[in-house]
Length: 173
Image (cartoon, rainbow, N blue to C red; front, side, top):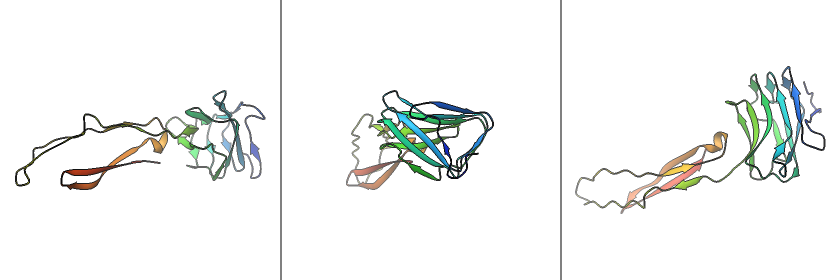
């Protein structure tokens, strides 16, 4: 257990892994250094449960972060706390992602999704007094982000009027 006011710092003025064999409860600070030049970060490797519900995450960049993601913790048991109590110094353009499926905590760069319209624009002409002919539109997108921010939601934002309908996108994060 890391008590309130205490520090868990896998690396000290350099990148390192710190391994625990009996689970960890962090009530203090989790200090992480990121080295974008080496595409690496301090990592806590935990065999057992991890409790971050009262933890403060403090991130320092030795060299500016520029990789897609940085693993900062892994665990083999259960995770208590869906988020850190507070986060400081998370690099601009990155989010803390709790990946419960892989039992990892990462700093993940938030890249814009790549949206492709498909074969378009789609033009449909019909007589206003006639029965419209069925048609479909294909809109595709991919997002390299992890966690909730990898979810893309599509919504028809305006009903068709005079032949035009609008589409709005949003990410899950």
